[in-house]
Image (cartoon, one colour):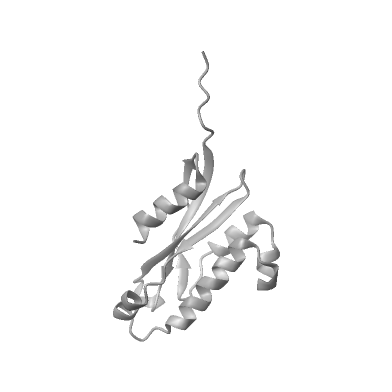
Length: 131
């Protein structure tokens, strides 16, 4: 007798970080981006905790951080009004979002995993890495 096990999907994710002063290599985790090629899934979950960021880096412009994270969200969603990057195919958008950069918003290295429910996995990673 064959059991119908839910299909496991290979996914990749990265943690989104606020890095106020790149040279100090200090950061706060503010979100997670998750990508699954097979399911054409690219979503982000984030939380900008303004009091926490202000305590961590009082000199940081919170509005700038919010602008960057909104652009990140817009690119994930493939919103065509967000510029040329958001019009790229999903794999290229994920690679662009997770590319190494020296800005106030950065991502961790990319990690792989398997999941039956990608939205649930995104929420679980967010809970573990950010909240």
